[in-house]
Length: 100
Image (cartoon, rainbow, N blue to C red; front, side, top):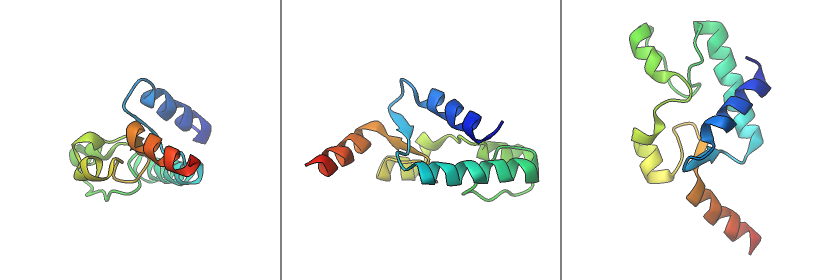
């Protein structure tokens, strides 16, 4: 997959969910670059903000997108570990403040 294909897959993944891609496209591009780099390096699309341990079974838990809804970062900040996905409600509040 190339950069645009990954972005489209992630956009599809977020459709009809309570989360969305981070509206900061530069941040999303940075994460995509990291995922593609990890794919070249490890053969898996691993989250670029998490460290691999070299044990394939454990590293599989780091595939992007990870199971971010169980993380404290999701519960406390309304985003996944690396900020790729953000809660829709939280983002609506931010947009509302910007537009006032």
